[in-house]
Image (tube, rainbow, N blue to C red; front, side, top):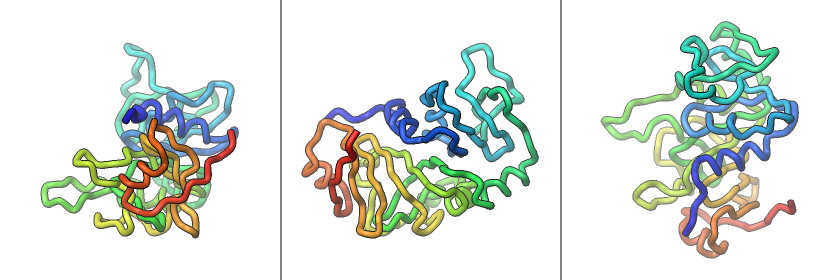
Amino acid sequence: MKRLTRDQIAARVARDIPEGAYVNLGIGLPTMVANHLPPEREVFLHTENGLLGMGPAPAPGEEDEDLINAGKQPVTILTGGSYFHHADSFAMMRGGHLDICVLGAFQVSAGGDLANWHTGAPDAIPAVGGAMDLAIGAKQVFIMMEHQTKSGESKLVERCTYPLTAVGCVNRIYTDLAVIDVTPQGLVVTDILADLPFDELQRITGVPLAYRPESN
């Protein structure tokens, strides 16, 4: 089975971010989305450490050590971008001013519950950051993750077994195999991204799926 690469997942997420959206990209995998937004599409990228108007990653050798995202990665700032206090940044997140946030996840439940900050393992380092604020504050929550763990278990589950970040917050999930919407009727696959039939996708997924492909 040929799965999407992380860059390809990021490009697929970027395709669904509309003109004029205010978007936060969570640390880790979601930061790659910035590199795939078309330059002609105006999208306002926010990072929780206090920057609005973030651009793609800088070219090698052009990094500015004072210009980083929440994951401490070098970034660029677009014309018209602005810096502000960390408290103001969290007020934007909590106040419903972000249209979309893109987060990574350890697990997502069939009801849209999110677990993305701690596996519960005794030696795991808790890393909640601003994920709880984003998950309840953004108008839409997109999740970007591999479909399965390294041991082959589905990250889509009936009920999260890891500590929750937020309840019922997820709207759409992008994996290396599919795009899946969280609806009141359950999880709905709108786009299969890998070379596998729906029956096989259902077999390796931990919860029931419906298939309603979007027309492109």
